[in-house]
Image 1: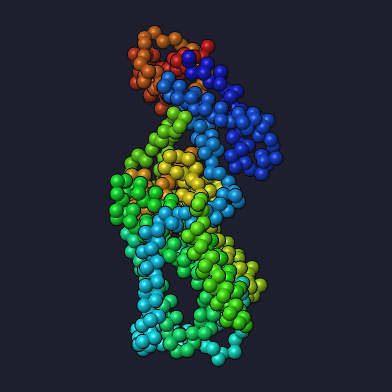
Image 2: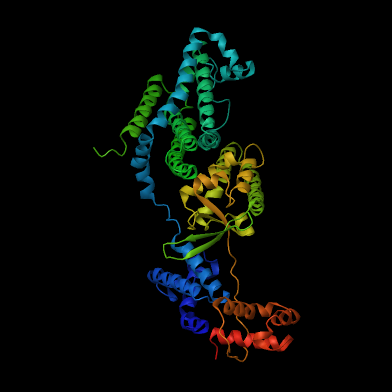
Length: 328
Length: 226
């Protein structure tokens, strides 16, 4: 068939698809008011798209000229973008991810998680224990000015109503915790691409700093306000950092030891797994920030409520990660 | 990177032509995005300063959304184009040509943390220059590509002239060259058209404007005009 006959025969089809695509792919406000079904029904789109693909293949095979090829390529390209558009976010999918998909993924990556937890908790517990025995060692971690600020923040004799902060309203601190903590979580994961050095560094440093602060405050008798403040949000916050770190370590391992895959393919796989883990960690950090800003800071509650709720949150978080999504 | 065209076969059995974007257009798009984000942040800052203490918290939440959420939301919801990429004419797609999804977009944007090192996107630029398809590390981990978004070009049909039937047989390549000449002729000067047409005296037995008319006539015949 000569090119002009081909063009004449299919022109109406192409024009209809063109019109439909103009109305369906990110239309301008003016076009949005029109009904794309006027061109053809939405259900017809897949068939129309496949026909244009076939016509493009034929046109290329027959050596038709740029006028036809460009036209068809453009239609195919736009159709491709519409057909393979990412699905809209569904609440159902998000809920099922939180309830079962995420805990399953954490358990599937248990090796990375265990190493990550070790890197965070070992220095933390070691510093707490060490400072009970040799309190003067705190000087090797914190500057005197930092120490003074820390001690002032958790002074049991200070007459402030809010725990764990110098000043600032709940919303202000919530914004601060979200921005600060989530950014740290994201960076911990991403820096895993540096052969896993990033998360190792972040985890050990945070473990050391947190452990030093906790150990020092406990040693000098400021432990009461400190533990009352941190017990509520510690579970989601520390576990989220462990998970983000584990995701980063997985990324580092994909780079160092890709196994039977090519390095880029191993990285792509670890990247997808890690992104899911980090999205879960993101939700946990939002939860932690909420508790930290609105619950942990309340100074007037009795110890039993503070520590009871903290223990409950720890149990709930661990139970969720250990049991969520199990079928038996 | 001389030719960045990548052919990607789709399930429909055709090849998508993806033209990977290099470092410079991507840097331009990034700079535009930074300018947009900064102006949004300055606007938010002025607005929330009026609200005092609570405004500070709302500002930090806004900062979080602009820093981490902006690229992901725009890339996924607007066919792989942040405003900066849209102005420059770039698009993020999966390596198989499909529009970028949530997960891939999250990964490639989180990995900016590493691509930014040691300063000024050093790692990202080096990776983009080394990689055949101009991918920075984030693109490799996410399995994505940044491509030039093709602008819709109005196709120019060959001019209508009286048909001249071919006497001697021509190969497929020769026929498509003649048609390509006819379709490009309207965008060439008459002198250049004459020059090109004079290269084929064996087909036209003429020179200059007459040769052009004869070639256009032959092309019309090849296209199947009557």
